[in-house]
Length: 386
Image 1 (tube, rainbow, N blue to C red):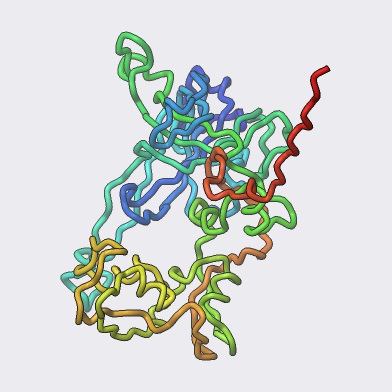
Image 2: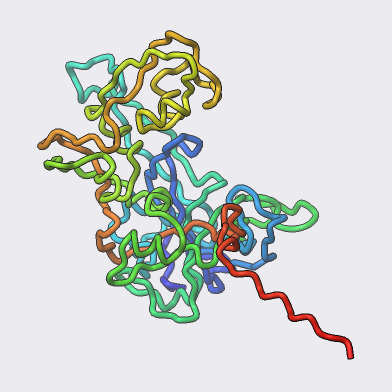
């Protein structure tokens, strides 16, 4: 074990000395929300047993082709604040463990009511409410796992130099299900710890190296800068810049590794709208080409009238259609504040770990016409019969 001396109030389980896996999993405020927030990180040490290698037939939520389906028993758990003090603090050999055999419990601090009964007395107890304590509730995705010799961990936490150890992605599938065949559950064998079912994802988490950038990693692993940002929330913070002479949404989108649509959505002040009175033959597709936008954007500006309007269906004649006048190539006013991603494609990344998207199979490009430029093989010369 990384910490051979248990805390006085924690009794080690029989499997404690055999634990070889440490998991880092995000505890979310609202797991089903569109943009959930990580309110804490939970660290679990687990005795693990591999069950099977998943194939495309087994793929499902949190499970991909090539993942390793595992069963484990929870040895002990700890809670770390969000954001982490350092990317490798969860691998510290001297973590303060909160629980043995069970998931750690997060106790949120009291929060100020949106409409307090005593707004003139902000410290009044009636102005606060206390959220319920919570634990990790599966499924939990975008976790990180370290599989190796836990006795080799150091303090403060660093990525151990163990060439045979593995840094992997992880998704927690179930907790506390029957331990084995016959329905033997936690009430019968509590000394083993909570049963966990999870998948380990080989080559889905990497440790950054000196000189790594988002653009370089996106090129190396066949993905995009924005995909890397979406998988790694610490890359999502924003920065404020001042526009300069000649700046356009198109050039800024390229410089900061994002899209024109993203810049317009996060900077409402750059929007300039006008009215286009439709004439015979106008469609969302044709007007999107005229105003250098997309049919999706036109639907958004004219909701709900055209929410389900086909891009090629003729629009009613004489309709006042809202169109964007700030085009991707329109010069912006100098000195205008603009929200942009903090991590540019060329920004050097710190020493940390990053999630990668699943590898996709490559298929033949249906638009490939290179065969048209290949000279046909010459016809064989006829042979004369003797």
